[in-house]
Image 1 (cartoon, rainbow, N blue to C red):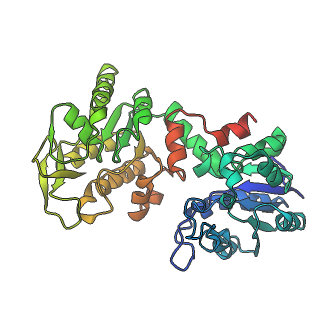
Image 2 (cartoon, helix red, strand yellow; image 1 turned 180 degrees about the vertical axis):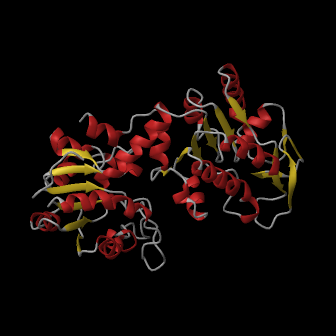
Image 3 (tube, one colour; image 1 turned 30 degrees about the vertical axis):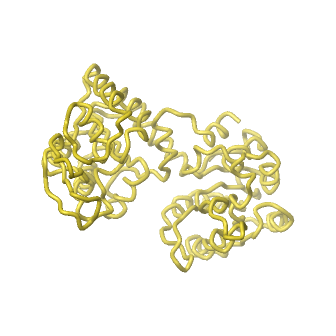
Length: 401
């Protein structure tokens, strides 16, 4: 951050869209902790901080009478927790913009922090409304975007607001800087061999990512439900496993591209199969291309785990996006666990590993391996789009105006 914050009010977009417990206390403060270096830096330079964020989807989950459920979605829920993280009292405005917000912002002194009400209480937020963004901008002297998780959204608080600040008065926070630096290392400066581990349910969710990575990687390991579309495309019998019939040709095209570029694509040789999509279903091991008619593949099998792990341990750069199976069910979690442990072991030997958002992050956190990998992205959809080669509106707004 190249702004001198002394005696300035900084409008900081953070991603405090955190899970809340039944009593509305913060269930997981990972995202909040991710913003602390930026907040503390501004405060240490003698600036004041005005934080804005969304929480949930209040306009999609209205109460029965059609009104916004302010009690459920208010950002006031995070204020006491943020106070304890920062070690100072944090002020709160029950308006996002308006007389109260303006009054509280105007009275903010150096070293103080103010949280604005949920930006998504305003329908203008998702529309990228100019007038709403102008009201936000009027609260502060400088603008800092540190919400990587929403950088792929062209909303008022993530994108439009930047245009009301001069180039010298807007910047990224430390979190976004780290995200961009680590993504760049994967896309433009990987140490080889580089391996991408791609999982999840559907090929259609990852088409652009798969295609882009085939221009960058040496190895690609494909697990999760999406693997069965590739296996069926090659003539395999996959029973009732998840498949996208309309993506079979695309799967063959991706396999052909990999072969032409001399890239190794590994599909799971065997699978843990079940006779129902249930934790309590009967399950056994079978070859992934010979799954009986009434059974479905829900995790990679022991042979696949061994083969995938061997490639991971020989890699110098690793990108992991998506689980290897239905890891939220204990019976089908071993594939994802094994891959996570192999990535951690490879990292301890000097490999650079980036966990690229979404369920992979949940798996790494759940297994207590967050500190054992090089970098865990805070932005699922944003990191995915960045790795796909897309320009993120929130990034472009700071860089180009």
